[in-house]
Image (cartoon, rainbow, N blue to C red):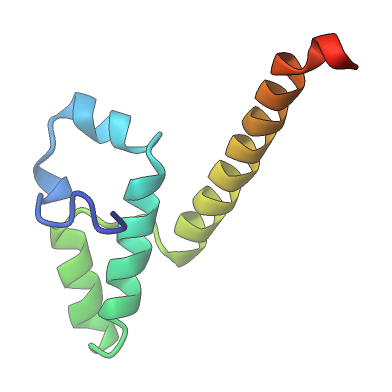
Length: 89
């Protein structure tokens, strides 16, 4: 689940799919996963590999995106719980 899309090169996506991938938390998970798995490679080769795969956001953007998605989904869940149980309050 974490590496969904790991075998498709994000650098070769069409413009629509590329923009659509930014609203998916799996994109940020996958890039963070690949960045952690390639951490032992020297910096120049690592950045070249990640850039060829289309992973150009960086660690901070990946973690910030995941935290943002966590907050958004938590708030949406709380809203749904409130909305479904509003008759009982």
